[in-house]
Image (cartoon, rainbow, N blue to C red; front, side):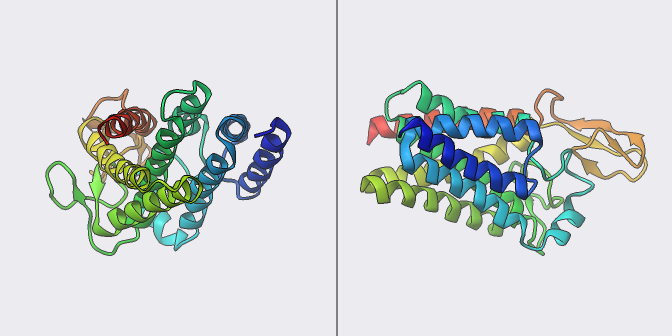
Length: 256
């Protein structure tokens, strides 16, 4: 796509993000740069996929926000607005795929974006379930909002989100096999993210109220590491998941 059109479309998306306060200012600038690269090298289809991921996340965040905040305020280490680390973890891998022009770049990019929206919807929609989620490793009931958990509602939202990205790709390229690969990779990538979140992501216990959280401070007290490694926060897990999802997509493309 022409560079000027890439900039105009990216400015449109950045304006919405700024208006919705979806990102910090530094994250917004980085996201704009990534969007320009994605649109220039990937064309209109890649831009629409990026838009769908972003708008899908925004729309999901508008559903019962008070209920979501009540369930996650003691758990999540970050606020709603995406920071630079989040943009790097979730958008940079797909950007690099298009920039480096690797084989099957459009399909792999779409699969990475499918995983991104699947993860976002699984978290934002799944946390609204009235039934407790399950830890993906132990299958025991767990706490809403804690990384490594899965729920029927969240998994359904993840599958729908992945299929939407696959459908957008299909409308431009008319390849049903690629539609299936994108959808499958997005959904399995989300499950992989939960698996890595349960296995590796650091979790703490508050010494006062004994809640399990991802925050280093709770009840005005420094929390105690309960499990996982401090290096593996949510952004690192997302970045690792993206790398593995891209590899899975590439292997499926070679096989099929």
